[in-house]
Length: 176
Image (cartoon, rainbow, N blue to C red; front, side, top):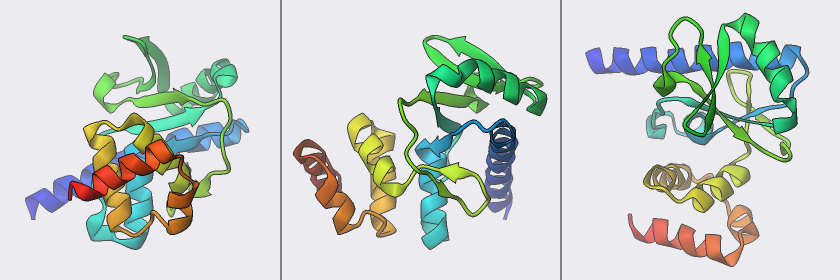
């Protein structure tokens, strides 16, 4: 029971951070989408709650040209911008720890995101699959396995991948 309580508390903390951030950005008309582990978690949780694997942080894709507007918009929500060791992040002003920060991913264009059940915008599965197969770190491979186990990687998504990414998808599937 204790483990479940810790898990649920962490999920709620991630959602709280995400909702504060999303609200601030939406109020300022700044496009964004949640990417990374929380986006994977949200997609998987919607179809297979027991298959959803928790992530440690929040990753957000935004347009680099809007950085000054983003910093101004999120400050009243309790976030401070930091650039540390080549990483752009928004940290909680009261507990500025890099581990719990919102990591910023700069994107030239934000594709049409989807609404998560909690109301914030997340990257579509097809975009996440491309990102994860391009990054191809161990955690990216695990995210691909999670999406695939939940049957979210459709034949259409697979067919849209370039040959190099199809080969990586096949490698992840073969490693199961």
